[in-house]
Length: 197
Image 1 (tube, rainbow, N blue to C red):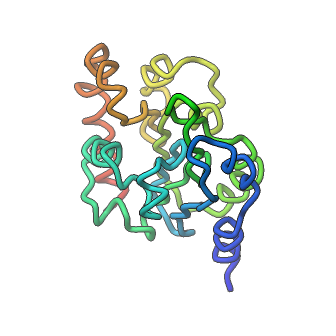
Image 2: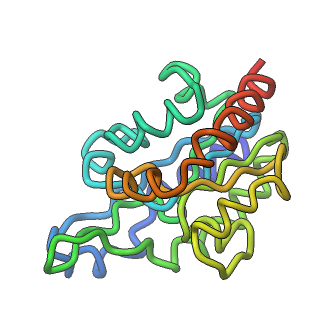
């Protein structure tokens, strides 16, 4: 068994957060969603799977995923091609909901346990797409807000693009920041196309 296959099996078997998840409003079991291979050229670094992804076992099988694929100009076939695209969230499991039904943040333990090891395996990555504030902090070391981080995209392009989360909750953000769709997305789509060839 190869080193990356062994690491993936270890992550899939992880039950570190079982007690934490059991005490959430959803009272669910851990179910890590692992979607990467060593040869991937594009890294999509996200936050955490939602409940639909928890059920499907496949990342971004929800409206957020449809919006993200539209932003990237990627077909589903390309997006889910693990030979070219690695999808690595800050937490591999659905964190659950709080008592008010809001998404809980990705547990930091997941990053501490797995992320440095995963990143050392992804040596072929030529484009990092960093989605949401939790991923911005880990991958970019930023402490500023999402808007400021995303607005500074030219400093990191074409190797790295920071994006807001593609959730419907950010529709108002998109309206307040028209430069995102007018300026950033065309450059991102061109880079995705180039790297995916």
